[in-house]
Length: 226
Image 1 (tube, rainbow, N blue to C red):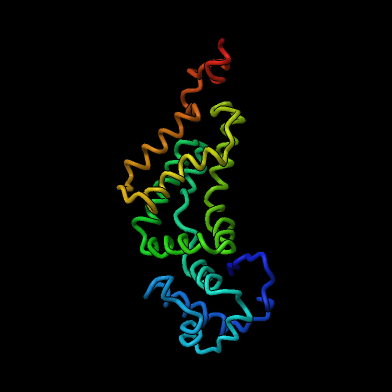
Image 2: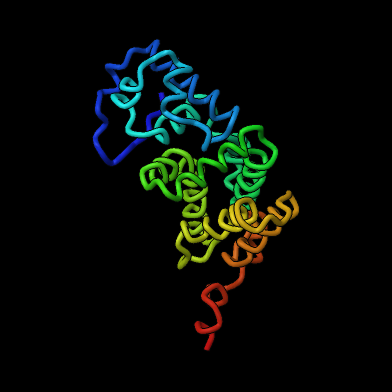
């Protein structure tokens, strides 16, 4: 079961929860979330739908956000990740494109995309929810790409001075900006353009062009050639 990792103490040990009541509460919270959106969900509404007292909710969760996020993780898979074949290629470009297109599948095309956007919005005023989403939602997506970047650096296919997390932000931040802020089109063509720009900034060299790699001095930038 997924658990929301809050920094403060949880009033009751999750292992001691009544499984029947726990299931009823998560089902109720998710149903209300889908029906009316995050702002419409209340602790009283969850309790009434689940057939439990409000005190039961507060014994097991510190807030509405905690219940709704746990319910979301319980009902929704981690989302589209690259296929095993993409991971097996070891090709950074393939992996970045798989994740960028997976982002579109989840947030734009997926039925739960609008609800996930609501949770991201709620996290802006709930530090605990923001931390939980970073650890349990975003990090599982970033970790494999981060490792692929490091592997590409070890192989000499990516600039050695690049911080992997900064490189990941170059891909994901523009996608989130269009999704949440600008309202501009967010489609496969845009995702590919973002990945292409990121690969250019990384001075990425695909594995099938190893023979034509530039010299070490050219990878270090103009100052190294002075």
